[in-house]
Image (cartoon, rainbow, N blue to C red; front, side, top):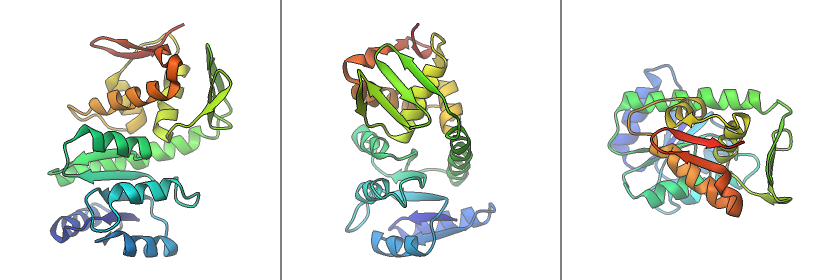
Length: 226
């Protein structure tokens, strides 16, 4: 089941119609109130969440979802008419799995949804692995799902955690933006490598003075050095 929270009735109806005609079950909601009521009855596989909503906006709903143990693992794709990078950064940093800017094609939306669902399934499998990694003062534990810098715990979103883990798993190897986009987001749309750059930026900020362990290889991608 996919939940779509979108106050524009025409867009919401088109999304629901498209999803149901591609084999996915979907329900639509015009504002946060009815959405929260539905969550009490059924937890969806994914939420499509418009940022500009009446009353409680999409970012506020996202923050509530990610701060609630019962709902924090639900994948979320943000739908926004805003082109400002700030809104995307805030959404991703709060825990959104992806974002798509209006206007968008319905087939692209379906592809994004399926990609997030595939990636979520893979992450659930990977989460069962018991692997620890350390590069300098940065330590990552897959089993405990924690990251420490010089012994101090730092808080990362799920996407930031998996991005750091992927780089640490491949220490010394340059991973292209396209590789990271494909492996962590599950899709490869032209022009969307910016998503990787935004996550790298926030990850470096959270690692603080140790953020420089992530090297930018100009014109190629990123790596964590030896």
